[in-house]
Image (tube, rainbow, N blue to C red; front, side):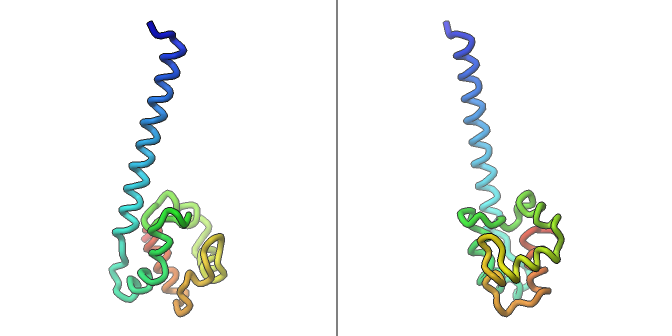
Length: 119
């Protein structure tokens, strides 16, 4: 007969495994979503494809994935002015101008709104 503490340990480990599997599945869904989204506006999509997708559809970069509302919400809460300042000046691992030296503030704002799916 199994000792009660062994059963408890076994239960804890199995629930940890299941929770870990759910997290991996959620991460895979967010990654697939990030890789499948693209702005409907052709000009904005061109900018997104050449300047944003490399980081915002790659979890290894630590950038918030496109469409990941949970990752974007704390950033959106800081306000668009702060986000634009971060884009222009660079922030954390993000290079200045987000690798789009010819983008306008309006284009950056549209890209942020698209990636954060905030509009």
